[in-house]
Image (cartoon, rainbow, N blue to C red; front, side):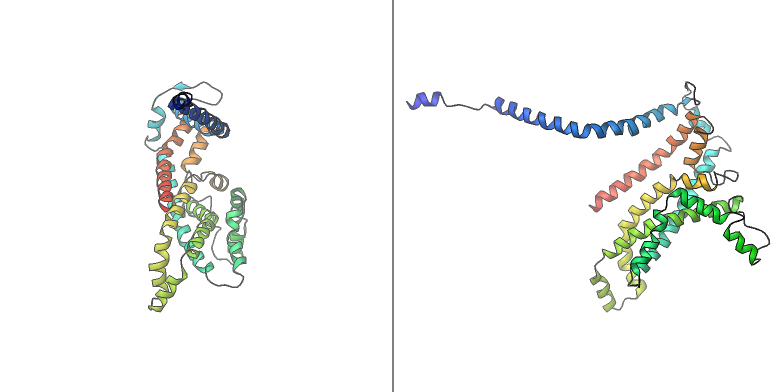
Length: 311
């Protein structure tokens, strides 16, 4: 009887288990694709396809409304020709980005140190500090354009108090246009640095400062040996993000100077726009944009690596 009962004992084979698991897994994968599919299609339509299409476009001579002609590397070699605007725009991009990063670092760190103290109406001052970051870039550009205009408040004060013999032509003088533009970029981007530095300072344990004060450390020594080392990761991440955003800035430069005078404020993003849209040379404009990709790829790589290391 035991042998008969054993004969009819149901057995679950490995194939049956694998079949059930595969059916369950198949349903999970189907659900996953249904959830991820719309996002993937959006990325494909808005990012992936335009990116590879721009790569192919950079190897063509193509004008708006016309078919492209394959020219190989001619668009790229033309960028490095003598007296090329590309090299001048690359230098302007480095100068504006580097000057703005240094200015935002110094001013943002100083403002964070002040706002981290116990001040009266501290929340009000913090809110006012964030205003330049909250104002749209177009509004900021037009506001500074009004301030720097020959009939604006700055030149009005110069004429009223006879501080100079002539007006200051901020965006019409090649020697002044670039520093004036850097000043605008610093003013609009400093709140982002201040916000990050302030958050990093508030995360530093107060016991470290108390112990250092008991040991006789001065204010500068506490800042140098406690605040700065603790903010080092925040400074690095903020600098990388700000470098990407500042070097890709187009709106403020286009509104304030349009790249002039004499291309003294033309940056790589602006040059790509001027060549591709007003100049109708889509292939040459795509080549300029592609030349910026290696630098942005390195910046994103280091940014991602640093953020993962912090986690």
